[in-house]
Image (cartoon, rainbow, N blue to C red; front, side):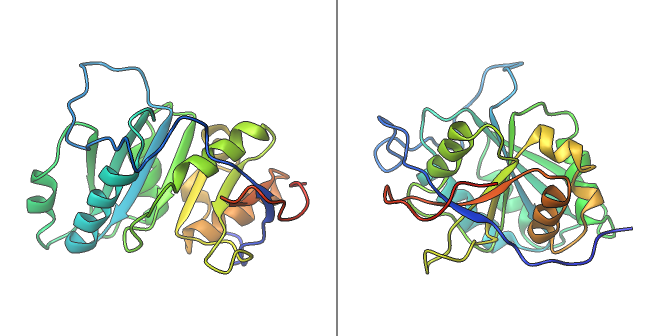
Length: 219
């Protein structure tokens, strides 16, 4: 049985972008070919979709423009029975993009776990396809996880600078495994994953990109 829905509650922490990495000056095209049998990526970016071809197209363009060239990543599109123009959108990119198809009735958590099961990435980034990322969005999140090894996951702060946003969640693979994967969480996915991590005493933090202190360290 899944836990009752709970709002995202996270402790703000400060995270400054990694020096020398500028997404605006060194974007990495998603179409860039990767060598055969590459080592597992550091970050697997999972993008669930269902009849969302147009939002997916915008999201993939945004990822191509904002992911720094130095980042070791893979993008996985998790499709649950789309019947729209998804295939045409997917045909326009290659290389770092992997697509996993599932039946329309497949639960989101089950589809995510099945799509990510072969991977051994250190981190999994769950992305809302309807909210294309902007600017230097991922480096502050990764930097926060690097600064605080005890953190199970991080979210960005929303536009108000105080409330965590559920558009993006970066979670350690070990923490995700500890709570039984996405399938043990249910929907809304980000909120349930955060609740599961907190129930397992795995800290979650909301991350701002500014260098000024924004509150206590996560506990």
